[in-house]
Length: 134
Image (cartoon, rainbow, N blue to C red; front, side, top):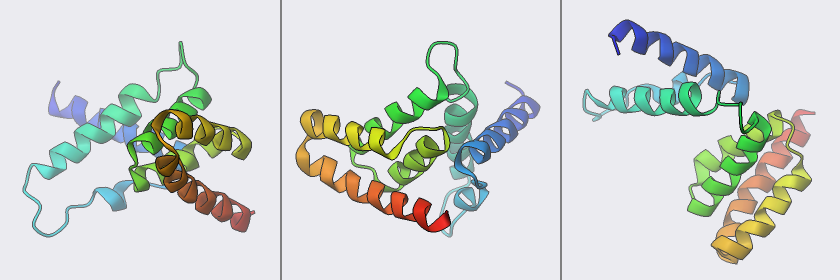
């Protein structure tokens, strides 16, 4: 892939992420002190892979379902900040709070109650943010 194609794909990914999240990702992707030069490559590749390769695939799995699967996956892994983003995406894609709670019931069964409670505390924070914004 040429650098021009990479740049175009990255721009599409950033635009798609904004559509899904409601804000631009660039502030999270800026270099921080001490990062090596290739850190920007990692951030570009990961962002492009998620938001220009995976999320737009709607032929067999719609975006709403993909969002709920992403909540369950990230919650099961116990990764807090991406979980916050995935819950925001899910809510913006029409997943209800009740459906997210049901996902956490499944997470409790298959990934563990402690992991589910930990993730659900983040969901409750996002739900409160949504209520405050309304």
